Length: 428
Ligand SMILES: *Cc1c(COP(=O)(O)O)cnc(C)c1O
Image (cartoon, rainbow, N blue to C red; front, side):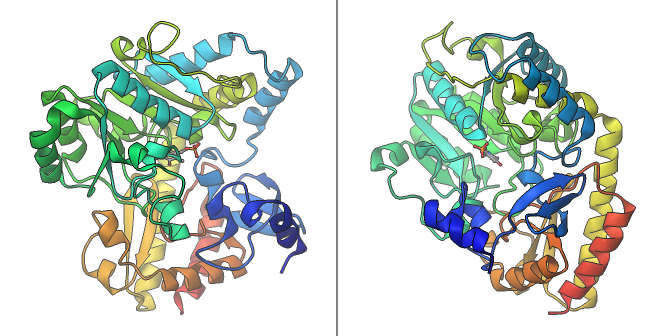
């Protein structure tokens, strides 16, 4: 047991700055990272690990990509923060607008939590309504109104929601099962005039990977619009990861529709604290200073974060997404192949290049479509699998409810190593 963890626990709750990092659901001691490069992280004792966490998504190009780091270094040499507008923010907004349909204006924040929280406030301010619909198992950050049945971190911690969230804050949030349009229609029939917005993960990846059924997102958009409400598509995790235009690029772009507001984060900041919300000017202009919906941030649009975001998006071209998609196909095949060969009951689910494995008889029997079903997986089997991988120096996200993340820096050598490790880990 490393002394780093016990020292950390003495001065920080659980020894961490964000709960899932504490290995609470899988047990054991978290790896304390000293550095990372490409597909690998190195711990404080100099041990190297093959990484499938990718900083929980941002590391699309791999860790410490030379050009991204160089752009950040240059930005840092010009000053760390000004509290004044910079040209870089305009350029990053332009990059986002060029990729995502239905985005005319962008507001930068530091975290995904702020982006979703602001999107909710904006939807309420724009519609003059109060009620929000979210889906069980979808995570939208840790703001009060959105913590109800919020998936991974909360599921991992075994908390019902969170202490400290008032009944008032939660009572304006209606939680429905994911992938069930009928329930959404029913709620709109009775409470339609009160509902400001539906917020949904573009593809759910915080209850394990649970892609929306065909037509689910478009159906949400149609139902919301027929009742004067907005659809907020949370692409903090999927945005600029599953395609050049995120999940919208795989779905709305093909089907010819757009949500009203999007939230971005993770890849958009290239590993630095940056997130954003975006949408039509008509809605976005309700934000201060133009409109009555207040939102602000001392470090919002921070020049180092903007530099990392700009460099990452500029480098994330078609070849990067093609590479990661093809790796994901191969890794999925390797994983199901090894688990099947070892007779381990499981189901691997995909959403673009994102994937996760649900262990156990119940998931093996039928696809997981919502949070209730996701909770019937055998987390003890995952824990064993996780620790075997960790012993072989492969870092998986330390929870059965999280997606595995590949990067442009992963390649054939990493797949070979993963294949060996997974074969061993599959022999429970
Ligand atoms: C990570 C995440 C958030 C929260 O972003 P933070 O930067 O951690 O606050 C919101 N929504 C989704 C879908 C996420 O995956």
